[in-house]
Length: 177
Image 1 (cartoon, rainbow, N blue to C red):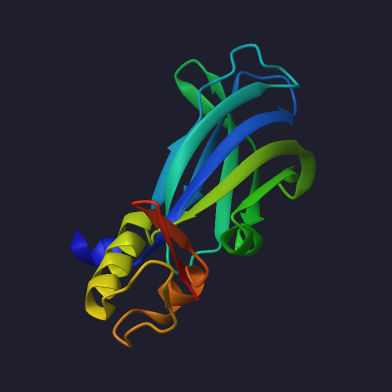
Image 2 (image 1 turned 30 degrees about the vertical axis):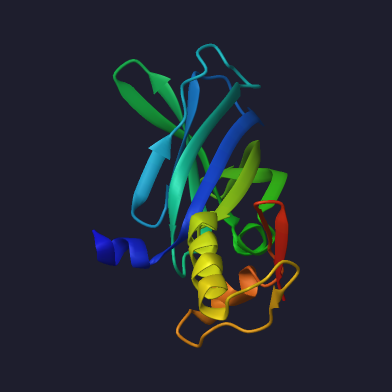
């Protein structure tokens, strides 16, 4: 379990809002790496289903494609209506992306789906506070002081992401530079 956590880049929040597709009772399945989750079914959603449903997916390091499949829930059967994929490179860098994405069925255009994506890095703010307080004790920071370096033992990507984080504690502001 601990090894799996080390390999996670963060969590992706996927909100399937609506789509333009054929007549069905549709739901969407999202797959990222080995994890797949689905939205609720929009019964009688027809050609313009509205889900406004959120699924959270762990983002394994190195995975940049989100696969989606839209199914028709037809009693005990689930028939594939359409499918598509989203390149996550931009959302992993920027943190958010909302857009219409194309759907296909057997290689032909089968509609569009509106998705809101939000990425949360695995490096938590609590970890940053831990670093901050460890360094402040180490350097005996005074009011108005700033930290201009990090020990080399911390991962470089963690340091770059949080290079300009400001922490306010006990009416004193310390800024990482």
